[in-house]
Image (tube, rainbow, N blue to C red; front, side, top):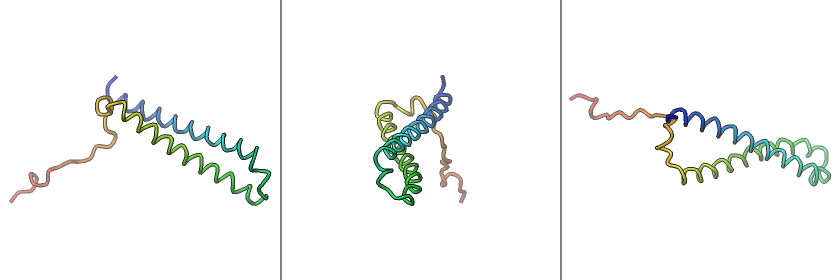
Length: 99
């Protein structure tokens, strides 16, 4: 496989993994909420807790994703196996201007 295919497969796999971690964290928070916290909160606070659990699951998956990428970057030479996703325009201004 070439670098472009590796890059596309990595992006797809990382996205699916991030979604899976988010769903698992949300389900874990939902179970913890239903077992321990729901009985302690009044009715108005129970409605807001669902939104907070969703935000906490997204935040937790973000930090887990960053941690996993740092470990991966230490083990794999990214330039050897993957193409850059964003290629910036690098033009030398001195060579393009004429006196």
